[in-house]
Image (cartoon, rainbow, N blue to C red; front, top):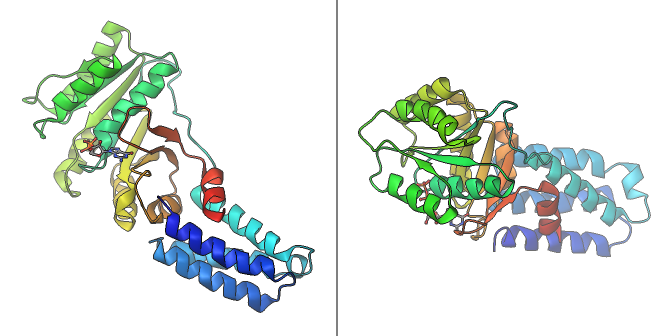
Length: 296
Ligand code: GDP
């Protein structure tokens, strides 16, 4: 299960702290050392961990906390609040255009779950009574178009493709006319990924962004890849500019590093998380719920 090791270590640390009744500054600092190790072991970015621990220490070692009736409980509450702060306030809404169509551009590396997540978001949006159009702009991976067509068929969502012998920028531009023609109000563009970041991919994405002026650029990253996901996010954000992230494969046994670091490193919110391969396995991201789950 995701975050299992982190959760069990933190819960153990806080159990000890709670059992003490009265706390000294030294007790708190020692507990925070354990928290620091647990976060680093969960693959949270080093700088993020350092800042986090400093903030908690600053708030937790004051007289007010130490002399309160339940100092252990107070410290846990501070850690909880700082965890929520770290992951950002919930911001799961999609920025729909006031005048349709809304254009949502998906970006991400190959294998991150981008195509699957395009389908999931289409399903989610359709449930809200909107009429999504999926756009196949990955012309390089042979099976990508077919994969999107199959998803569209299963979801009863139209898929716009112009084959793979055409510039993806043109496909994206044309998809806007197509949306007008068939009455779609939300365009979801599945762009091409690569195994690694390269200039060619970034340039193509920049061109598409410039051409269609999306209302949302969503980056899909695989939670299982830990700090790599954070580096990828930083890179995409610097080069393309993203509005938010979707963290996939949270149903796996990720240690948690990406979920806990990405917001602090990139300044961009995780909007949704993927929790399985099925089309309904997409959930809005709730930092407070995750913090509660981790702290038990
Ligand atoms: P793309 O190359 O980024 O378009 O990736 P795909 O959409 O083809 O997904 C790659 C693999 O990850 C597929 O086997 C998906 O079923 C799987 N996948 C995507 N999202 C999730 C998720 O949230 N959980 C799990 N367990 N698998 C996922």
